[in-house]
Length: 155
Length: 65
Image (cartoon, rainbow over all chains, first blue to last red; front, side):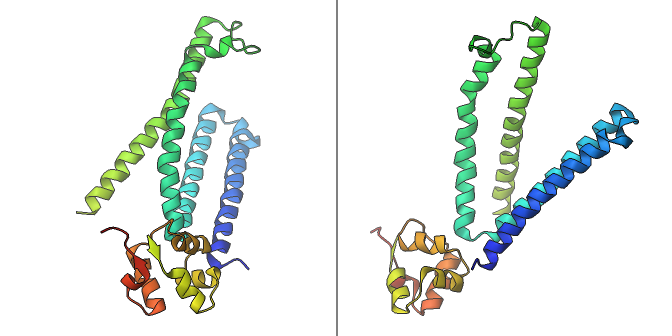
């Protein structure tokens, strides 16, 4: 028989999955459904951005609840995994990043970007750079903020 | 850190799950502490000591020095 903590964990995961589905579906329905179609790009951008913010709030809330629900062993495991796992994961992605932005995909058999005009290829490379670097920068910023807060709170 | 948790648990005929419930931690936590793979925090160490009615030093053996 699972204990209360395990049942709460399952409950939080269920809430996360159901919540994510509802938020994603509601946002897309509003933005691209009968209402959104007639209201233009500005409306769709606003709705999808607000939808993403709502999803982030839901994820953060459940992350806090899940973390508090863990015992100290689980919390320590999460901290270690996030610190070392994410750290090494990001660093390990750097060679892949360099491979893509220097045109490596064009050298891979079956993947050819030669049909793209130079401007289009450059634009795609820029988008890839942004998509790769943004999470990196945001994670580093988040780490710096929390680390500073933690040090200051211990004075 | 070496400890006598397994011995104390066995004296009372408790399973790891029984001890986990009494300490309000997971069974994995109990197993990790017993095998010396994880050192409990001070609050948890005090909780363990209170549960078994013994001082912390009688349960956990510091290998240093």
